[in-house]
Image: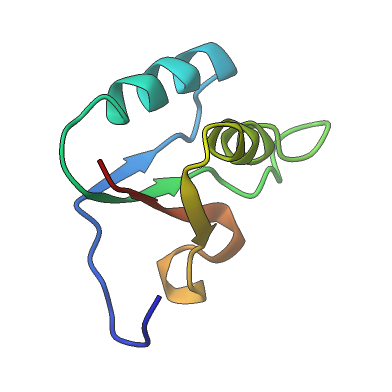
Length: 88
């Protein structure tokens, strides 16, 4: 990633979602054509009793499918958001 600001093609906010909803959203998202830069807001898990649930789920989902991602810059959500890059 370079030092210049990059605007994602899409921003998805998963606050308030459960894992089954999140999985459907991700599956639909990655079925789209073309290169894609998506910011996925997963939250920090501060309202979850057991800590971050969606963040860990999304990271595992992306890793298992060899989808490139990184943590967002602090001004874009920091550790509560992921920058996801899909090339088809």
